Amino acid sequence: MKHSYLFLADGFEEIEALATVDVLRRAQMEVITVSINRDTVVTGAHGVAVTADATIANVDLDTDTEWLICPGGMPGASHLAADAKLTDMLVRHHAAGGKIAAICASPALVLWTAGVIDGRHFTCYPGMEPEDCGDLYTGDPVVAFDTLITGNGPASTLAFAYSIVAATKGVDVASEVAKAMMY
Image (tube, rainbow, N blue to C red; front, top):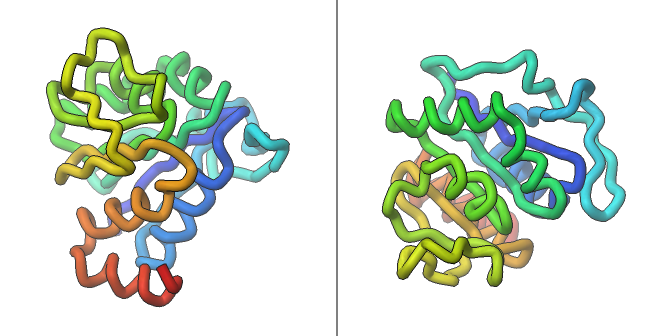
């Protein structure tokens, strides 16, 4: 079965990470939460401590890896961007045509820096967009392509997550999950 990784670093935005995991799991997608810390406990930007399913030392890309997902939050996104193994995974997954999603500060700090935006339009938290991105930054709540989905912040989390479901399992499944959640 295909699986996706959602990466957690101290200072992550709780709603962006946990609501995304919740929506994807409701859609019957296997999502593995991955701490970039040495252990599985990660503390969010608002003091919510969670236990990840694995640490980054114990995961790698394989043919069943579908999505690599980076929530935002500060300083969480900065920690994700500084993690050499995560950056390598993003670059390799992108080069292989893999699917990548990021929200809030992570599209700018993690994906742009790693070079995986690759000339496509994207969104991120307003004011975080790179100075050299030209008109690629849209400011929209969510920008979705088949292999790249970006969101602009906490309030866009459900739309972001439903976009990942739609790109993976189709619009009908995303709509069913959204309807069941009274979205």
